[in-house]
Structures are given as structure tokens and as C-alpha cells.
Amino acid sequence: MSDKRPIGIFDSGIGGLTVLKELQRVLPHEHFVYFADTTNLPYGEKTPEQIIGYARQTLAWMQNEIGAKLVIAACHTSSATALDIVSQEFSIPVIGTIYPLVETIMQNHQDARIGIIATPTSVNSRTHENILIKSGFKGQIQSISCPRFVPLIESGQIFGSELLRITYEYLSIFKEKDFNTLVYGCTHYPWIADTIRQALPETVAYIDPAASIATKSFQELYKYKIFNTLNDKVKVDFYCSGSPETFSSQVSLLMSAPKPLVTLKVLTDQASLPQKRAVNA
Ligand code: DGL
Image (cartoon, rainbow, N blue to C red; front, side):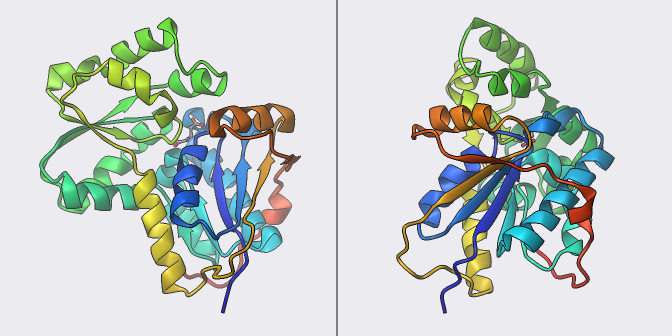
């Protein structure tokens, strides 16, 4: 039987669009609901308690009002600080960024010398390192905090000399420590991939977990038999908690598409009452 319910995706802003692109490629018959919590951006400078609150509200809304069949936290900061705690309160499956990423590293980059670039809150949580080490990772790993990237990317400065200067500064540690692999530990950062590549030697390998997140999503739909098997005209419904006009322009620019309709959605605690049944990924 076909399941036409949408897949929910959320992030603080435009970062999750780097994951949405990959999801649309791997799951071309699925409907998506994308939520950008732009009023609370940047997540990377919020406390874990705040991030937990946002994730709880978002999941409650996606499960109870949107009727999502699966939710993807397309945000490392949320995945690193909130997901293990909050996802158990909901009955729908929830996928974050970190477990799919770790699976990819363990399969193909076991002995790499890795620099993970991420937000301050993700770096402070040490979640990427801890999960990798628990999974038996034998290589070298260090998280690198890049606090200025998200504000620059959100303000449209995805090229230019200021961005390049900061990128050289943040990534100088690659040379010092002889890292050979960069992991995108924030979904915003692939939008500045050209600048990042410019600042590092050609020999460095790059891991963007978007593809592993899409594969994991496919596997979850398969596991629960909740694919949309109808050949529908698929759609993405966009919501944000800040300015819909601004977010619509950003989506249009980054996804090379006409400006989509974006609906204002302000999340409240009211929607965040946990559901009883707890199952989860
Ligand atoms: N894109 C998010 C992440 O992957 C959040 C960035 C932010 O809002 O600071 O961490």
C-alpha cells in the first residue's frame, strides 16, 4: 500500500537544503515538509537545553499536525545535542545526521586523519568524536569550531575575500595536524564547498553526510513499508519561523528554482506535549 504522508525535514535555516537536494534525488516520489527555524538561528550558539526545546517542538508539530511519516533532523547541532533524548518521545522514526555519517566513516575511512568542521555547540558536545570512538574508529579525529560560517552563509556571503580569509584561519589546523579528510559537520557548510576546497591541499578528501542520510531514509521507509509508491506530482511545503519572504528568496537562489510559497510557522510549547508511544531509530 502506498503511504502519501510527507517526510519532515528541519534545520535552523538553509543548511538542511543541502540534505533535501540529496533526499529528492534518492526518493523522487516522496512529498517533503521543510521547516527552517530561522527565528532561532544560529543553533550553533544556543545551549543544549534550548536546542532540545526546539527539537521537541518541531517533532511534536511534525508528528501531530503535519502527520509526517518520518522526520529528518538535517542539522548536526540538533543531532549532537537533542536527538537521542527527544526522539524517544515520539512514535514516528527520526533520523539525524551523525549516525549515518559515522556509518560512512566506518565503512570507507577507518584510518583517516579527520578534521570535522562544525558549530560551537556541536564541537562542545563532542558527540561526533564520542560516537565515532564508540563505534571503534581507529584514526585521528578533531572537531573544529567555525562560528562565523553560519551567519555569513545565511546572509548570502557564500563567496568573497572575507569568507576566504576566515576559511584559511579555521582550516590552518589541517596543515599543522596533517589531516587528510574533512568532514562537513554542519549542513550549512557544503554551500561554501568551493571556498573550503580553495583553502586546502588537493589531496584532502571530503565527506558530506547528505548521501548517507538519504540512504538511511530510504532504508527506514523500506523497513516500515511506508514508501509512496504512486507516481504523484511531488511537492515540498516550506515553513519557517522568521521571515517567509527572506527564506523564499534564499531557497530560490540556492535551489535554482522559482520562489516557493513559504508559510510562517511559530512553534509553541503547546504543540510539544510528548506522545506516549516510544519507538525509535
Ligand atoms: N545547519 C545546522 C547544523 O548542521 C545549524 C547551524 C546553526 O544554526 O548554527 O549544525
